[in-house]
Length: 346
Ligand code: FDA
Image (cartoon, rainbow, N blue to C red; front, side, top):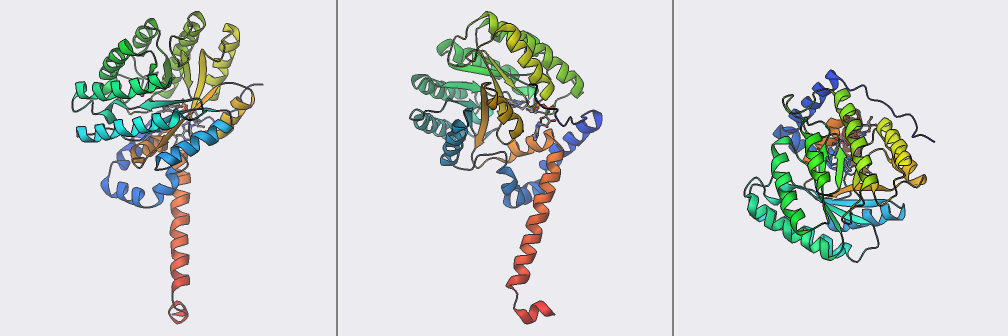
């Protein structure tokens, strides 16, 4: 059975314009304050497990009961002070200590900019070595997320350094960047695990395909290369060689065809999806026995993550507008109910 027809968003030039607009508006301080303090918080719960580590662990346990694998992400990025990076290291160390006791098949995902790479790359490397080393002792996989293209080189640099010491570390590559076919060859030659995604950041057309159709086509080519490699070479660490990170039904169907043609087994590949996105597809894959990992973010710094999810799918703005409207109506109703009867009649 193929994955059911997906509500194909016809994302072309106009959709890219909406995406830029959403991201630009989300940076406006008054919009930020309104969403963070108000309706954004309730809406974020659709995409974010919660604000505390307990919330993250509870979500991990519940996904694990559905037979899903999990990657936990402590939200945070673009720190400007190494004390914040140090704090992120401590949170991840605590997370790993907690996960050590869990039966869930779980990894952690790390953002280099949360570890201070924009402040001091060597300090960031030291913090990351601590986290990856601790995870290695607990037999847990770690993956470096890939941020916007100004971070690609430094993320590859970090990955090379970490990989020299530990095999439990993998990387993310983005199909929208022109450079990715060459980066993929380097990462595969090293025997490391790759999460292939389309790319969530707004990039210049000098470095990335501006049109969605080209990104999708590039993803298809990279997917074929990645899965063919996964068939030829066993994983060298705890992470599967190929992580297929997409909710795109056409690409998932293509991946399934290749998985069967190549005879790939579950330790060589997995699908990956985002917490709260296309839960129907998640259930579909899990029900058919395909390995699926859910990227599960938690933490109080959810705003930049939420804006990327909104920009990816403008239809989310409609949900958001709906939740803002219901909140305004609920507030009005509770205000008028709270008014003394005589005042309410005036
Ligand atoms: P596409 O955008 O074509 O969406 C296909 C369908 O999925 C849509 O039609 C819609 O139904 C649904 N969908 C997609 N996004 C949705 C959303 N936000 N809300 C509701 N429905 C949605 N990016 C990056 O730059 N660096 C990274 O490290 C990562 N890491 C990462 C991990 C994992 C596990 C996933 C799944 C994705 C990432 N990404 C990422 C994000 C990725 O680059 C991309 O922006 C999103 O996955 C959306 O692209 P799709 O491949 O799903 O296709």
